[in-house]
Each structure stands twice: as structure tokens, then as C-alpha cells.
Image 1 (tube, one colour):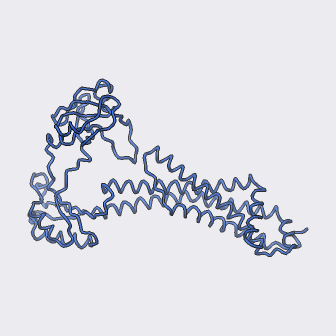
Image 2 (cartoon, helix red, strand yellow):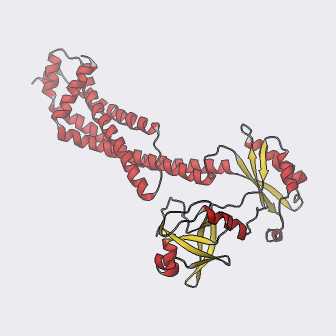
Image 3 (cartoon, rainbow, N blue to C red):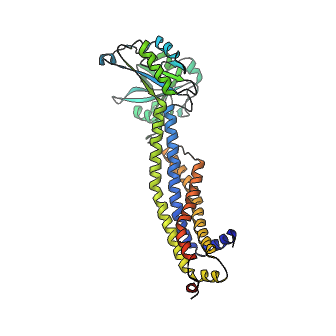
Length: 399
């Protein structure tokens, strides 16, 4: 008897016991869906975390060279640890593409403002063109950016904290480091932030206005070094440190150290992946329980169909044919459960991700995992019942 005929017979047997089959499939669906949901959210969280750490998708390798003074008094001085001569020295090292002082971080600017007599730090975003869509008032414009106007948009939460309501805040003032800005618009703010999301800005002002009135100069306490593609980071960083030890302006007062962002992101990636796999393994326990349920159902099916097995054997069916039929029953049940479980898992991941503000990562490996695991469960947990059915004594089955 060929596999197709066996599969048709197996399908008829499954449909004959719909309630029992659905309960067995339900266990597989729950197990697969749990694992797929956790993997999709975990991988999405991992990618988003690394993207935030690296400030984008660039594949360039950057290292940060720091200076650790041997005398604590130097730590509190205004002395520059690096000079333009140090930058020229580092650029001469083979494998170095560029070197410079770190640019001021305009993506995370915090300014203290007084709210009801207490100073609170609020995040400020710098805008080149248009600000966020306002709920009251108007947006910032490119014209105000060019004319260095002291105007601002604030979120509704900050407006409520400062003036009691968004309406009362419009056309009032907000002071940032002794500079008074006129509030021209209010945009929607969030009362609470997601555990996994990045903080949202509370205040928006024109970028050129900020650069004109606020003196944020390059920090000379470290260097950012970009490496050429294809070079060994460890080898180049060793050469950079050796050159600074020999020619650095502050070589006599401390030591030069390297902070490798590639190593940091790689380490964090491994930790997050390990956590995701561990949680998935815990969720996978439900798959084992579902597999036991499949085995139990198959044993019951074999027991109830003893006469059917006997008749088929009497008509010429071989032990292998009987074994194949029951194996296909188990695999069909679990494979169907795996497909449904994958769909449920991805849907659950999207729903959960949208509620806690995490991007979902769907990879081909999860499709392969769902199909292979569900098929594997069907085969493994159906082997013993199928073998028991095939080995039944012909005389006993016909009694």
C-alpha cells in the first residue's frame, strides 16, 4: 500500500474522531504558538536594542579611545586629554580610516526646567524643518530655523505640568539655560513610556537656534576612530594604543584605553539571544506535554481499532503498512497543529509587540522550526503506538 493511500486512511480516521483530534491539535498549537511568539518578540527586541546602541545600520567598525589619568585631580580639571596632534598620530596608523573628537550628541539633549518650583530634566529635540503635528497651535518651520527664532513646541504632558493645560501653555514661555522660548504649539505626549521603547522628546526647538545660543563644543576627553573595512579590529587598536603611548600629549600622566563598540554590541546580542532561547525552551515544555497527549491519543486509537487492524491484516496488509498508517495519523495531526500554531504565534507577536512598542522580527528559521518541530513530535510520539498496532497478533485482533 503506497503512502498516499495510507495518508487518506489516516485522514479518515482523524476526521472520524474530530473532538479528540481537535483537543490533541490544540495542545500542539499552544506549544508552537508560545515558542514562535517569544522568538519573534525576542529577536525584534534584540535587533532594536542593537540598532539603538549603534545609532543606525552602518557596518563600519568604530572604536572609542579613552584616557584614564593616573592622578585623580586631573579628572576634575578642564584639561583636554587629546589634541589635534594626537588625531594626526592616530590617522597615520595603518587600517585607520578616520579619527576625530566625538561629535556632540544632539540625539539625547536634556535641559532642566522649573515646574512648580522643582527642576526637572526634559528631553529636547532639534528640528531642521517641520516639528511634530500639533494638537494645539502650529508646527515649527524651516524659516524659524534659518532666522534663529526662539520658538518651541512642547508635549501635552509638559504643558499640563507647567500651566495646567495645553490651552494655557500656548503663547507662554519656557526657559532653557536662561534662554526664554515662546511656546507656539503643543503636540501629543505620552503619560507613560514602554519598558522597551526609547524616550520621546518633551520639547522641540529649531536646530540652528540651539547651535547659535548654546555653546556645545566637541568633547576632547576621547577620540572616535573609524577602521578600514576588512582589517582586524584588535590588531589596529593595539597599534593605535602603542602610537599614543609613544607620542600622545598626555602619555606621562595616565594611560590610553580602548572601548570597542563592536565587542559591546556582540556581547549584548549574545546575552539577549541566550535569554530568548532559554524562555523559548521553557515554553517548549508545553510541546513535550502536547507530544505525550499525541502518544496517549494514538494508544487509545490503536486500542479502539483492534478489529480494523485485524481485518486489514487478514486482507493482506503488512506490519509496515499498519505502522505507516498510524505514523501518518500522528504526523498529520501535529503538522496541522504546527501550521496553525505558527499563524497564531505570529499574530500574537504582532498584537503584543504593538501594545508594548517592540518591532517584531519574522525570520525564515521560525517557519522551518514550526514545521520541523511539529513533524518531529508527530514521528517521535507516534512510533511506539504505531509499532504496538503493527505487532498485534492476527488471531487476537479477530476475536
